[in-house]
Amino acid sequence: MKALVLSGGAGTRLRPITHTRAKQLVPVANKPVLFYGLEAIASAGIKQVGVIVGDTAAEIQAAVGDGSSFGLEVTYIRQEAPLGLAHCVLIARDYLGDDDFVMYLGDNLLQQDLASFVARFEARRARATAPRLGEELPLMPSAQILLKQVEDPQRFGVAELDPSGRVTRLVEKPTVPPSDLALVGVYLFDPHIHEAVASIAPSARGELEVTDAIQWLIDHGQVVHSEVLDGWWIDMGKLTPLLEANRLLLEGIERRVDGELDAESRLEGRVVVEAGARLVRSVVRGPAVIGTGTELVDSFVGPFSAIGPGCLISHSEIEHSVVMGSSRVVHAGRIEDSLLGYDVEVTRSARRPRATRLMVGDHCLVDLS
Image (cartoon, rainbow, N blue to C red; front, side, top):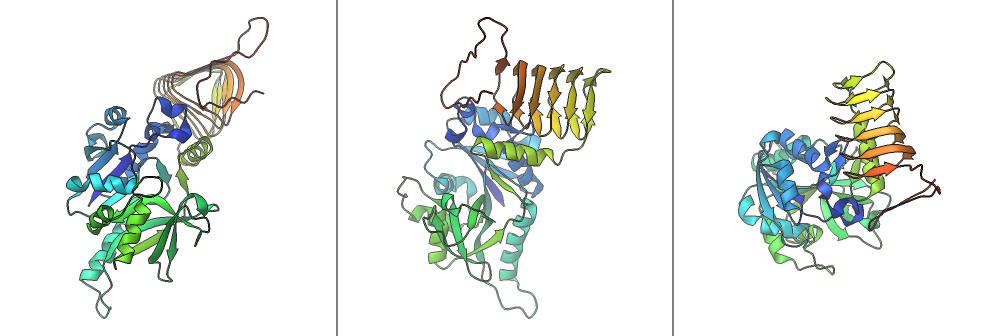
């Protein structure tokens, strides 16, 4: 089995961060979101991975390299324009060959164990060729999709199931949803999907939709199984889900202190202080992560915060926030529920007259106390 990881999207909903950075490399708990998917693929025993890239190809390639650091063999496949998820399968035809594959959206985070999801698909296919003693020969599944119950199914591709869990119908962003089961960004396919993506037409938004391709399989007699996700799933498209993902991942960390603390600093709870980080007269209350080479001076970092590498936090308080690398937060008061990009500077000036002075780019949000 191979994997196809989609990392070509522009990330318009996370601007301004994604004006200058691939959305798949935005860090959550101080690790790029794409890396979680690659680690899950490696844990599932898959070695060969095709990564779909677009305008941010150079940045993705620089971060992932040849995949060896994940135990993977990575091949990059260029998508010239964002023409849909099914289009990614279409352009990856030569790479995928006749292998089964998992398709994984590089900007999604989920609690599901990918290895067990893959194993159940392979077991179903094995039983279709060699059924258990006394068992009727089951139909060979051509695809398996992961679903999640959501409160707003109108925003997603939605599945309708029969009592056995087989998919009977898929609808993309329906006005009247047939169920509350949304497609999560993980799919398993056998080679039948190649005929499907080559047979469908672009949707009204000009894209080849994966829901249409899966529906084509169903309409042409192929079996599509589903599983409903019990744990959490985060679509990393906007600030609030990103902070929620950061919170969920930080819940699972274990205390580790590789950096330095002076006698007047203290750590409370599950805190990771990376090597080269230094705390001076500061308090960190976990769960929280302090990145490599970051310095905290006369500051407080509260729960569910991830401070990236090479930052300076001085005379400030930060809680439930993500601060990316090489940023400076100095005399900034208290910051909550925030996302600060790379090389950001937040200061409080003593100049007179006292005023708020901003240099803010497109698509920013500023909430002043």
